[in-house]
Image (cartoon, rainbow, N blue to C red):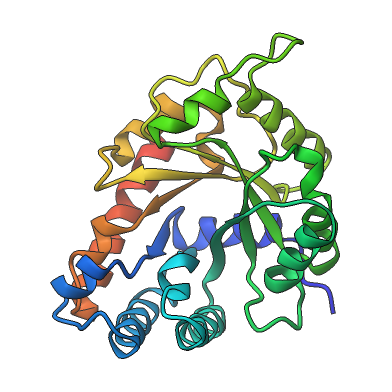
Length: 280
Protein backbone atom coordinates (compact mmCIF):
# COMPACT_ATOMS: atom_id res chain seq x y z
CA UNK A 1 0.00 0.00 0.00
CA UNK A 2 1.34 3.44 -0.94
CA UNK A 3 1.48 5.97 1.86
CA UNK A 4 -0.11 9.38 1.65
CA UNK A 5 2.55 11.61 0.04
CA UNK A 6 5.33 12.70 2.37
CA UNK A 7 4.64 16.39 1.81
CA UNK A 8 1.04 16.06 3.02
CA UNK A 9 2.09 14.01 6.04
CA UNK A 10 4.85 16.47 6.89
CA UNK A 11 2.55 19.49 6.61
CA UNK A 12 0.12 17.87 9.03
CA UNK A 13 2.86 16.85 11.47
CA UNK A 14 4.34 20.35 11.47
CA UNK A 15 0.94 21.94 12.04
CA UNK A 16 0.07 19.55 14.86
CA UNK A 17 3.45 19.09 16.59
CA UNK A 18 5.31 22.23 15.59
CA UNK A 19 7.92 22.67 12.85
CA UNK A 20 10.95 21.01 14.39
CA UNK A 21 13.34 18.24 13.42
CA UNK A 22 15.58 16.74 16.09
CA UNK A 23 18.69 14.89 14.98
CA UNK A 24 19.78 11.56 16.38
CA UNK A 25 23.53 12.12 16.18
CA UNK A 26 25.42 9.75 18.50
CA UNK A 27 28.86 11.37 18.26
CA UNK A 28 31.46 9.66 20.43
CA UNK A 29 31.82 12.92 22.39
CA UNK A 30 28.09 13.11 23.00
CA UNK A 31 27.95 9.52 24.19
CA UNK A 32 30.71 10.44 26.66
CA UNK A 33 28.75 13.47 27.86
CA UNK A 34 25.86 11.15 28.60
CA UNK A 35 28.17 8.81 30.53
CA UNK A 36 27.91 6.11 27.87
CA UNK A 37 30.66 4.01 26.36
CA UNK A 38 31.47 4.40 22.66
CA UNK A 39 30.13 0.93 21.96
CA UNK A 40 27.09 -0.66 20.37
CA UNK A 41 25.51 -0.83 23.83
CA UNK A 42 26.10 2.89 24.34
CA UNK A 43 24.77 3.63 20.86
CA UNK A 44 21.61 1.67 21.53
CA UNK A 45 21.01 3.30 24.91
CA UNK A 46 21.47 6.73 23.37
CA UNK A 47 19.23 6.23 20.37
CA UNK A 48 16.45 4.50 22.30
CA UNK A 49 16.45 7.31 24.86
CA UNK A 50 16.12 9.95 22.14
CA UNK A 51 13.29 8.04 20.49
CA UNK A 52 11.52 7.56 23.82
CA UNK A 53 11.84 11.24 24.63
CA UNK A 54 10.96 12.69 21.22
CA UNK A 55 9.05 10.40 18.91
CA UNK A 56 5.61 11.07 20.35
CA UNK A 57 5.98 14.87 20.26
CA UNK A 58 8.29 16.21 17.53
CA UNK A 59 7.34 16.29 13.87
CA UNK A 60 10.57 14.81 12.55
CA UNK A 61 13.47 12.74 13.84
CA UNK A 62 16.61 12.64 11.70
CA UNK A 63 19.11 9.88 12.44
CA UNK A 64 22.59 10.45 11.00
CA UNK A 65 23.35 7.12 9.39
CA UNK A 66 27.14 7.45 9.59
CA UNK A 67 27.20 7.38 13.38
CA UNK A 68 25.44 4.00 13.30
CA UNK A 69 27.32 2.59 10.31
CA UNK A 70 30.69 3.06 12.05
CA UNK A 71 29.76 0.14 14.34
CA UNK A 72 29.17 -2.18 11.38
CA UNK A 73 26.20 -4.52 11.10
CA UNK A 74 25.32 -4.26 14.80
CA UNK A 75 25.14 -0.49 14.52
CA UNK A 76 22.91 -0.72 11.47
CA UNK A 77 20.65 -3.08 13.41
CA UNK A 78 20.30 -0.38 16.10
CA UNK A 79 19.44 2.10 13.37
CA UNK A 80 16.76 -0.21 11.97
CA UNK A 81 15.13 -0.54 15.39
CA UNK A 82 15.33 3.21 16.00
CA UNK A 83 13.61 3.99 12.70
CA UNK A 84 10.89 1.43 13.33
CA UNK A 85 10.20 2.61 16.88
CA UNK A 86 10.24 6.30 15.96
CA UNK A 87 7.75 5.82 13.14
CA UNK A 88 5.54 3.62 15.32
CA UNK A 89 5.36 6.43 17.89
CA UNK A 90 4.21 8.93 15.26
CA UNK A 91 7.36 10.82 14.25
CA UNK A 92 8.35 11.13 10.63
CA UNK A 93 11.87 9.85 10.03
CA UNK A 94 14.28 11.59 7.68
CA UNK A 95 17.30 9.38 7.09
CA UNK A 96 20.36 11.60 6.88
CA UNK A 97 22.53 9.49 4.58
CA UNK A 98 23.28 12.03 1.79
CA UNK A 99 23.41 9.32 -0.85
CA UNK A 100 24.27 10.20 -4.43
CA UNK A 101 25.41 8.10 -7.39
CA UNK A 102 24.34 7.10 -10.89
CA UNK A 103 22.22 4.43 -12.51
CA UNK A 104 21.78 1.10 -10.78
CA UNK A 105 23.84 2.22 -7.77
CA UNK A 106 21.51 5.15 -7.10
CA UNK A 107 18.59 2.79 -7.55
CA UNK A 108 20.07 0.45 -4.92
CA UNK A 109 20.53 3.32 -2.48
CA UNK A 110 16.91 4.31 -3.08
CA UNK A 111 15.71 0.76 -2.46
CA UNK A 112 17.65 0.67 0.82
CA UNK A 113 15.78 3.61 2.30
CA UNK A 114 12.67 4.28 0.22
CA UNK A 115 11.28 0.84 -0.58
CA UNK A 116 8.31 0.11 1.69
CA UNK A 117 9.59 -3.39 2.59
CA UNK A 118 13.18 -2.31 3.30
CA UNK A 119 14.37 -2.67 6.92
CA UNK A 120 15.57 0.96 6.86
CA UNK A 121 12.48 2.40 5.14
CA UNK A 122 12.24 6.05 6.09
CA UNK A 123 9.73 8.77 5.37
CA UNK A 124 12.39 10.77 3.54
CA UNK A 125 16.07 10.58 2.61
CA UNK A 126 18.75 13.22 2.20
CA UNK A 127 20.49 12.98 -1.17
CA UNK A 128 23.36 14.70 -2.98
CA UNK A 129 22.69 15.92 -6.55
CA UNK A 130 26.27 16.78 -7.43
CA UNK A 131 26.59 14.09 -10.06
CA UNK A 132 23.84 16.04 -11.80
CA UNK A 133 20.25 16.38 -10.67
CA UNK A 134 19.18 13.75 -13.20
CA UNK A 135 21.27 11.16 -11.36
CA UNK A 136 18.63 11.25 -8.62
CA UNK A 137 15.90 9.97 -10.96
CA UNK A 138 15.72 6.46 -9.43
CA UNK A 139 15.23 7.96 -5.96
CA UNK A 140 12.64 10.45 -7.21
CA UNK A 141 10.67 7.68 -8.92
CA UNK A 142 10.73 5.32 -5.94
CA UNK A 143 9.85 8.12 -3.52
CA UNK A 144 6.78 8.96 -5.60
CA UNK A 145 5.80 5.29 -5.75
CA UNK A 146 6.15 4.68 -2.00
CA UNK A 147 4.84 8.01 -0.69
CA UNK A 148 8.24 9.01 0.65
CA UNK A 149 10.21 12.21 0.11
CA UNK A 150 13.69 13.52 -0.60
CA UNK A 151 15.74 16.38 0.78
CA UNK A 152 18.24 17.48 -1.84
CA UNK A 153 21.42 19.31 -0.85
CA UNK A 154 21.04 22.80 -2.32
CA UNK A 155 22.64 25.52 -0.16
CA UNK A 156 24.38 23.79 2.71
CA UNK A 157 25.70 25.35 5.89
CA UNK A 158 29.29 24.08 5.61
CA UNK A 159 31.72 26.75 4.37
CA UNK A 160 33.18 24.45 1.71
CA UNK A 161 29.80 24.05 0.01
CA UNK A 162 29.94 27.46 -1.60
CA UNK A 163 32.66 26.52 -4.07
CA UNK A 164 30.18 24.21 -5.78
CA UNK A 165 26.78 25.59 -4.87
CA UNK A 166 27.52 29.25 -5.65
CA UNK A 167 29.35 28.46 -8.89
CA UNK A 168 27.68 30.19 -11.85
CA UNK A 169 26.55 28.14 -14.82
CA UNK A 170 26.63 29.24 -18.45
CA UNK A 171 22.98 30.30 -18.19
CA UNK A 172 23.84 32.74 -15.38
CA UNK A 173 22.22 30.72 -12.59
CA UNK A 174 24.20 29.33 -9.70
CA UNK A 175 24.33 25.58 -9.17
CA UNK A 176 22.34 25.95 -5.94
CA UNK A 177 19.63 27.96 -7.69
CA UNK A 178 19.45 25.26 -10.37
CA UNK A 179 18.77 22.61 -7.73
CA UNK A 180 15.99 24.75 -6.25
CA UNK A 181 14.45 25.14 -9.71
CA UNK A 182 14.48 21.37 -10.25
CA UNK A 183 12.68 20.89 -6.94
CA UNK A 184 10.07 23.51 -7.77
CA UNK A 185 9.36 21.57 -10.95
CA UNK A 186 9.03 18.28 -9.03
CA UNK A 187 6.52 19.87 -6.64
CA UNK A 188 4.44 21.78 -9.19
CA UNK A 189 0.74 21.52 -8.44
CA UNK A 190 1.15 19.47 -5.26
CA UNK A 191 -1.08 20.34 -2.29
CA UNK A 192 -0.74 21.14 0.55
CA UNK A 193 3.03 20.66 0.13
CA UNK A 194 5.28 18.82 -2.29
CA UNK A 195 7.42 15.91 -1.15
CA UNK A 196 10.74 17.01 -2.64
CA UNK A 197 12.58 19.36 -0.35
CA UNK A 198 15.85 21.25 -0.22
CA UNK A 199 18.55 21.36 2.41
CA UNK A 200 19.34 25.04 3.04
CA UNK A 201 21.46 26.15 5.97
CA UNK A 202 19.89 28.42 8.58
CA UNK A 203 23.31 30.01 9.10
CA UNK A 204 23.57 31.48 5.58
CA UNK A 205 22.05 34.88 6.27
CA UNK A 206 20.02 36.77 3.70
CA UNK A 207 19.02 34.44 0.85
CA UNK A 208 16.73 36.90 -0.91
CA UNK A 209 18.63 36.43 -4.18
CA UNK A 210 17.48 32.79 -4.26
CA UNK A 211 13.96 31.64 -5.07
CA UNK A 212 13.08 29.41 -2.13
CA UNK A 213 9.45 29.06 -3.23
CA UNK A 214 9.77 25.41 -4.25
CA UNK A 215 6.31 24.36 -2.95
CA UNK A 216 8.15 21.85 -0.82
CA UNK A 217 9.83 21.61 2.57
CA UNK A 218 13.19 23.15 3.42
CA UNK A 219 15.31 21.24 5.91
CA UNK A 220 17.36 23.88 7.72
CA UNK A 221 20.41 22.70 9.69
CA UNK A 222 22.35 25.13 11.82
CA UNK A 223 19.96 25.94 14.67
CA UNK A 224 21.59 25.75 18.10
CA UNK A 225 25.22 24.71 18.30
CA UNK A 226 26.07 26.05 14.82
CA UNK A 227 24.94 29.52 15.81
CA UNK A 228 21.55 30.17 14.18
CA UNK A 229 18.47 30.80 16.33
CA UNK A 230 14.76 30.37 15.67
CA UNK A 231 14.45 34.15 15.51
CA UNK A 232 16.78 34.14 12.46
CA UNK A 233 14.45 32.01 10.35
CA UNK A 234 12.21 34.76 8.87
CA UNK A 235 15.24 36.81 7.84
CA UNK A 236 16.96 33.86 6.17
CA UNK A 237 13.97 32.21 4.50
CA UNK A 238 11.55 35.08 3.92
CA UNK A 239 8.16 34.08 2.55
CA UNK A 240 9.16 30.39 2.50
CA UNK A 241 9.57 30.28 6.29
CA UNK A 242 6.29 28.40 6.86
CA UNK A 243 7.71 25.44 4.95
CA UNK A 244 11.00 25.38 6.86
CA UNK A 245 11.82 22.38 9.06
CA UNK A 246 14.57 23.63 11.39
CA UNK A 247 16.97 20.92 12.47
CA UNK A 248 18.35 20.93 16.00
CA UNK A 249 20.74 18.25 17.19
CA UNK A 250 23.29 19.09 19.87
CA UNK A 251 21.16 22.00 21.13
CA UNK A 252 18.64 19.41 22.35
CA UNK A 253 20.78 16.30 22.80
CA UNK A 254 23.26 17.94 25.18
CA UNK A 255 20.44 18.06 27.75
CA UNK A 256 20.40 14.25 28.00
CA UNK A 257 20.43 11.59 29.18
CA UNK A 258 17.31 12.45 31.18
CA UNK A 259 14.11 11.99 29.17
CA UNK A 260 12.32 14.90 30.84
CA UNK A 261 15.20 17.30 30.20
CA UNK A 262 15.35 16.25 26.54
CA UNK A 263 11.62 16.77 26.15
CA UNK A 264 11.78 20.18 27.80
CA UNK A 265 14.60 21.27 25.49
CA UNK A 266 12.75 20.12 22.39
CA UNK A 267 9.55 21.81 23.56
CA UNK A 268 11.41 25.11 24.07
CA UNK A 269 12.87 25.01 20.57
CA UNK A 270 9.51 24.07 19.04
CA UNK A 271 7.79 26.96 20.82
CA UNK A 272 10.47 29.41 19.73
CA UNK A 273 10.26 28.25 16.13
CA UNK A 274 6.47 28.43 16.08
CA UNK A 275 6.57 31.96 17.54
CA UNK A 276 9.12 33.10 14.95
CA UNK A 277 7.11 31.64 12.06
CA UNK A 278 3.82 33.08 13.28
CA UNK A 279 5.37 36.52 13.73
CA UNK A 280 6.83 36.55 10.20
